[in-house]
Image (cartoon, rainbow, N blue to C red; front, side):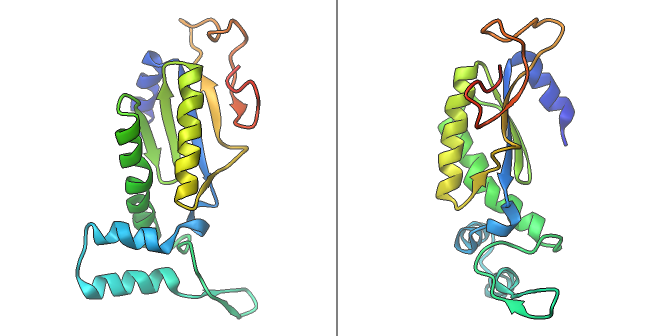
Length: 175
């Protein structure tokens, strides 16, 4: 994690959105993953093997096989690469295009987005939620938070309350 860069950004921005995608590796849309792959590769044999990897049946503990219609095997050697490629288009490029002044850092399915105000953080969070839904993903309701970056120079959040982070379901996120 590039925590040094993220920490320095917190010195300049008062609010962060801490994102976690629920069941990320289990819910990746195969068609969207292959679309991202095709941006970078056109060799038929490569596309064939990647598609086979995605659609290979999952074997359960009892030995039976289950058809895989979405997701990529967790722990598989190519899964992190495919996941990062997918998120590059589904999240990174989208966020840069729609919120060009917003800085962020993403680590696989987790991200930290910096905001200048709680209002901006809430606005960006709702937009990200809608975008991920379009891509067949959803934010983890308990792990995704808006937080105020309290430090020695900031005695409390903008509303004067005690600064802390709250789950995204909270009506007073970040306060």
